[in-house]
Image (tube, rainbow over the protein chains, first blue to last red):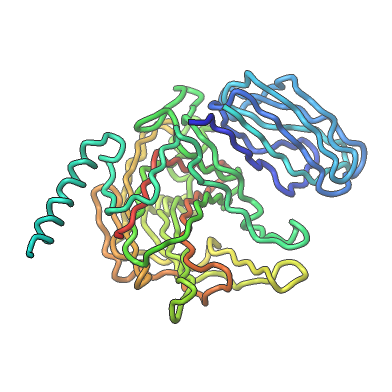
Length: 111
Length: 301
């Protein structure tokens, strides 16, 4: 059997402001993840650096180390690659007041 | 020749013997033709995110659909006890809501049918809220349930789109209700986008649920929020008459005489549609999780 390989849309057309994060995603079966964050609309204000976060329980989160600048313009794409992440994954970013981005976050997971 | 009946009986006996000797299928009672048998150590098996319709701009998607997220392969990992695992493997399908009272999420498997007859939907499932409090939390999940989305073939007279819905209303506004409900009404169809090709309706809106007569049932809800037990469910539906035939959950079988489906005029592009959905809904600002260990969909053809 071929190894599992899934594209999961974890945030679609969500407006990220303040302390933003994608919903917790369980992917313990996957050995690697490539995560794309696409700006669906023109971002407002200076854009923060997005980071991959991992978790022991899906509720408490720590930075994994992978990070990328949020897209500066519409249809810009940030990409982060991770492995050795245990079970839980999400993407988080902290936006300054008045700043936002409407995002499409996709996780590409491979066993 | 008068051998057809004995031959059929022998064939059926052989079929049942083979099923019951197979550890993976023996827990199900499939009809003669297995359409799909999903064990989630094999992957997502086609259970994907129910995405709403849209045109030109994702902003046109109805809010009920916009909240949906993708399914996961879960080991039911808990902070206090580690991975719970499934019945026959470490993995189950997970459908998780967002942490907002009333939030829903829906997984869908999309097929078409080749024969209008009896079909059977069997799953082993369980549900729990996110274990974010050291409490039993038995009233935090509002409901879990399933629906079919069906439409007659393009040459069938009087064809309709038919959507049988059943949910286990576990709790509502903090009250531990525990009963099965069905739905015969959907919300109005709305055009989305600037053209006239795309319509949308949110059939899982909170309004319009009706109690299944005799549908009260207390399920096993283990003693802390990180212990789960798998529950068996079976629903039989006739694609010929578009009527529910039978419904069983664990040791209880329910009278489906009063059951009705959502019925709407056939749509121009959904012929022979055979879709299956599983959903979860939260009653608090806490994520609700529906887990499915395995599913078997079969037909009498």
